Amino acid sequence: MRYIGWTLLIAFWVFVGAFLHYTLPQKDIVRVTGTEIIRKDFSGLSRLFYAQADSGDTDVGNRDLRLITTTRANGRVSVYRNEDTGFGWPPYFKLDSSNLQAEAAEVVSTKADPQWVIVTHYGWRSPLLSIYANAISLKPVDGPDAPKGIPWINIIALTLLTLLAAFFYAIWARWRRFRRARIDPRIEELQDNWEAAGDAVQERRGRFRRWLNTWR
Image 1 (cartoon, helix red, strand yellow):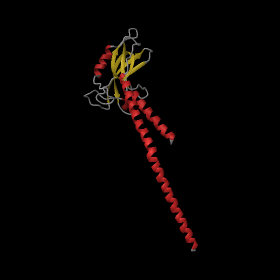
Image 2 (spheres, helix red, strand yellow):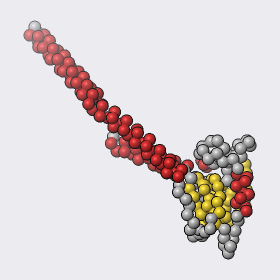
Image 3 (cartoon, one colour):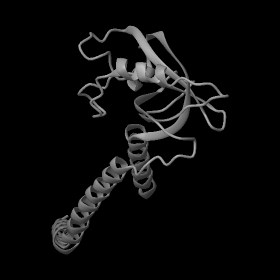
Image 4 (cartoon, helix red, strand yellow):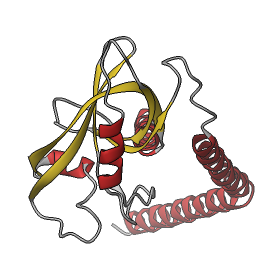
């Protein structure tokens, strides 16, 4: 039973960690190599990892998907999608995908004359599931080693989560001490009384049977 409890606890925190890693903003320093628009069919498991159509448009089963192709300083290719988040989850309130696509087109550069930018994004890139991280903003920087800044949103979110976890742990610890001090002794007392009553009934039955045997 203890192993089941630990397994559920570990699975819960793995889920929380994955949720935060997917939702919280991340920053990459990349060079934009191009922009494109593809027709995407939103069905199956991958549908969970896409946001929505542009604000004001109807979200249908298939639609155009804006992509921003980039290359990092180490030569690794990264592809980001460019979708509105609107007023849904995650709460980035992104309503300017068209503008961001234009900004990305403006900073397209070559390997010989690179223009480095910080891409703020959330989500994951998985070729297996055909999903992309969603770009939130672009910011030109001097080079691939430029500072990315302090991740205040991540710090605040993790601090709040830690305080919330500490709050619930404090409640659970107090409840556990209260149960051990007040409830468990009462339950044990009731069990003892129940067992004593059962023993008394068995003893009386035994006496009655012995009394009957004397008349046989």
